[in-house]
Image (tube, rainbow, N blue to C red; front, side):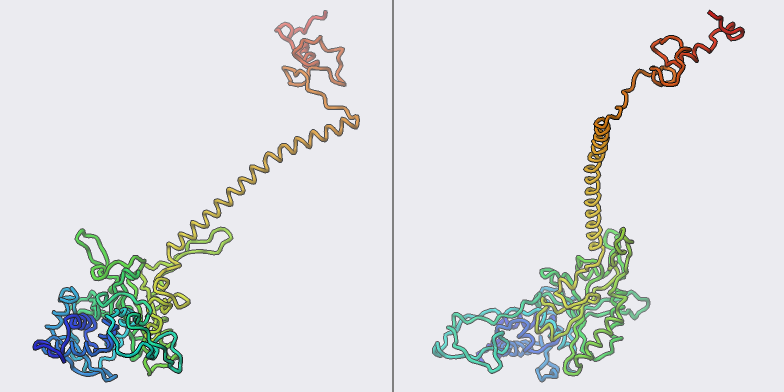
Length: 477
């Protein structure tokens, strides 16, 4: 096999590193899964099988059984776990357990978790160095079964030169093997020696894809929906637990394990259903709806009404500060469309969405603040328009009344009606006109003094001005 004395199966250091990294994350896996996760560009998994055999000779890997599909299952020894920590660049305390004994039962749950990680990561196949081929250039090769232009009959096409051969294009994935952690244990606050805990099947850290942290629960549909839903209540209990930082400020305990999500609420959780061949389509839908109903209090948030605005209906927002964003999907859907497609159903939303849209909160406080700012802007525009109309109508109304009065006066003048007399001098005493008026006895009025009207002059003449005049009256001239 072209091996050496230390590695008789002929494995290379690069492939052995791939195997240790994959086993450090997946804990128990097959050579085929390591091949698809780490280097799908290789022709087959023979190089990885050889690397597993070479590592087992050095006490780093061990095989304890086979999966239900017949493939041999491999895991790490404690020494191999330390070697995997070195390859991944992680502290040995964060590597978890070695999953000893899981392979003896076929590890169906671990296999589903591995397939979920492979379906989301989708490691691109690196092109290898072209190999000189002895076959003529006109030879034909079958179209790969997974290619988009594959016909049912499996046609053949002329083979391109070796230098032009390209790796089949696959849908983009998220993260890499170093972005994952499995069997992450989160201890709950409890009294006594038996501390309760909740364990995530896998945790993804992919800030480059807008997912700082995403927890995964993989369900093989073997336990009841009530058991699965009860696990999310333990998640919320852990997320609510508070601690203090080095400055004495309170912060959630989960912030000591995971980075901030940059969104309101607790870290999101994705539930991946793996129906297999046992669960039909309708049974799967019923199970998903059952889990959705049982966890409604956990993901729905709290509605905060902000009242109505005029004739508009009442508006408000949802407070997600104590809610867990819950995403649902299936393993076949992930394998077919990839993690960046519309494969996620956010509980509370109404359709399949991309991860970015599924994690968004279109009805939170920020969305309400945007709607409220838009309403205020419309009200300001309406008030400005009303003030502008008032400014335009006020001058037109005043000048219109004046023009109407002048027009009526001109019409009366044209008909011969007497024009209104201009006001003359006013009396200093009563304010009336100083000129004589019809019906007034002018013969009794004193002579004009240029200050009073005739009546005021008469009244002034009758009023005594001295004590003698008050007692005996005025002298007759």
